[in-house]
Amino acid sequence: MIITFDDSTRDFVLDTFGKKSDAEGYVSDDGHRVLTPRGEEIAIAEFAGVRKGSVVFVKSDITSLIEAAEAMN
Amino acid sequence: MKLLEKLKSIGINLPKLRDIKFFHISVNIDNSVHVDLKNSAVTIDPKRLSGKQRRALQHFLREEALPEYGAILHEKNLGTIETVRSELPGIHREMAALQSVIPPADVPLLQSCLYLRHRFQKNQPVEDLKAQIVHAYGPRGRNFANLCSADYLERWFKPVLDELNVAHPNDPATVKDKFLEFYNRILSELPWTEFVCVSTRQGKAAASIVAKINRNVQTGVRFLNVHGLGDANVKKIMAMLPEIEAATKAVPVKIEQDKARIFVRLEIPE
Image: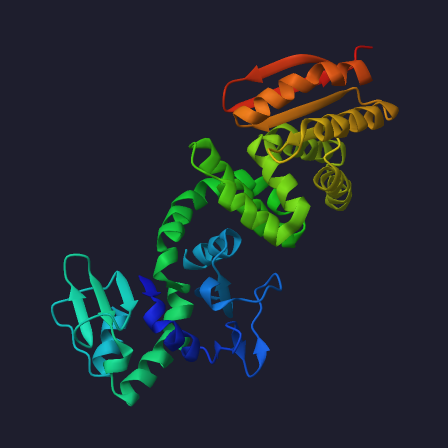
């Protein structure tokens, strides 16, 4: 099964995993910006979702999306 | 089926559905739940659920759905994800030999470069992908993407690894060390190749090629492979060959060229 969301429910998904958008528009957690496995901050416009392992926040670049696709297999 | 049971347990009963293939979360529907029987798709508006139902849905997504289904994704990425999933078996085959010897941090880079190559081989645009790879991995990423697209995985990296395995049959640590020495040098310096890019002026590209040939000849390497994509680069490379030959005595021993790409092998005669 494939689970998706859209812009209207992006905050709901972030809240599901204890995160939110900070004042400057980045995914954050109690004032600390969430980082990808490669140490990049995630602007809300680039937030592509979450993947397992345990919970990894996904940016909308090809490397991150390939890792998400691997997690779905 | 698990999701149907979970939805039922939080008060959302969908008796007409046997299975759900797509589960979408959106407020852009008329009711709290929209069912698309034909596509086995369900959309839920969390704002129309009660607080208790909403919390139960979040708990399910976090604790059960993510571990079981692997990812929860923005719908705008679905097309890319579906394409990537269809390409993954081929990518896994192509990377199998190298996966265990390259640095773990480079495995996602290798996957990205192989995906780019699949798109490139289908004549699909790759500039956006290459820009993302360069953004994430810098010049090494650009070099790896270029090498991969020009089939150097098969022409250089895998043969070198095969030779090392033959030379050191019972010593995987030595094989890995020697391979990494080779691999890291190629990725950081591109000593035997030049990928001419559109934004590089002819004089600068020619100077870079001349410098590489002169450096290589000191270590006994008497060739350089030059690649270019696009009509402008084809013309640029053809135009600079006389200047390179005058400066280095390297002559083109092989030219493969059409309007979209060019490959030139330059060699200095013995």
